Image (cartoon, rainbow, N blue to C red; front, side, top):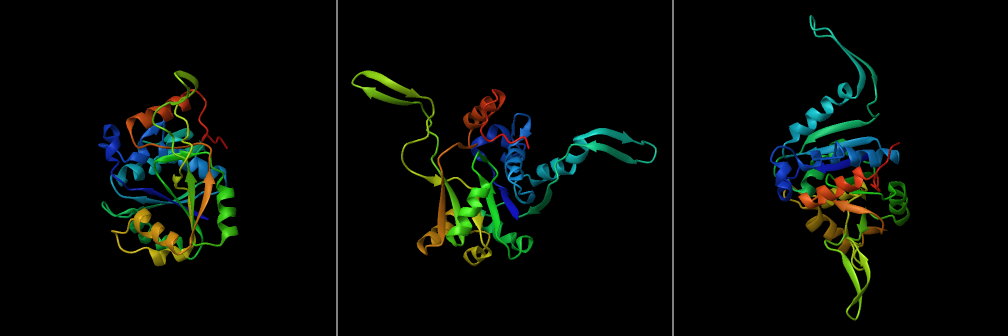
Length: 257
């Protein structure tokens, strides 16, 4: 099964980094966030990726073009004739299609452009700026059990500020950045049947505002509720938070296998 990663946006709210690179290439723990997302999928056995490129897509292309050699334990070069011998590479066994889907194409339009790479099979979709510890096999089982065209992973967004529980003028509980108690949002980690292409139009189609809204009205959108860890990287504050928990060894999305 193939996994689409939407990696073409401008990332304007993280301009400190995205002036030079697309947001999925901003690093956490020495690796692009895109790598973290792919490690998550690969851990659950999903190792075929179609990456929808747009803004500064050449940076992502260069990263993967050099990935095998960078991760080789031994790199032998012949400067005379340019021969390269790569030995003992630790690179992952992933298959990746890097597809330019346009600079200003909207999210739904990007998926529509990938139709010929995805064929007539069920496929997964996620965004290139969010990490989670969601069980992706459980999401897929849920999707198949419900028999709808689309499944979205619903998450509770992390609060921006510490939460207080008061008893009169006394704080009886303090929780730093708790998950909010009410409300669910689209956390990505979607599963689509090929019928979704009938709901995708031209490059101006916004997946969230057009396609998912229509599918919901027609009873074709199921929601897998994930109440554990989820975090997007929209701002510098988000990036620093992810970096801190990674360096502290407490990253819930870390999958070493």
